[in-house]
Image (cartoon, rainbow, N blue to C red):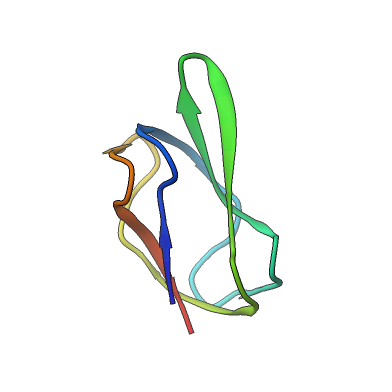
Length: 69
């Protein structure tokens, strides 16, 4: 499953690492946009396979942030 950005912004912080288990609704990444912190959450439980972004990267709405298996 792909986790996608819900809005444009900068990747402020990754809250999990590849190989970690996540639960549905758990924060995976925090985006920063217009001085607001926007959590991006896992839509289902699984293991984080990979991140497609790094902290500090700019993402657009719909960009893939991470892959969860």
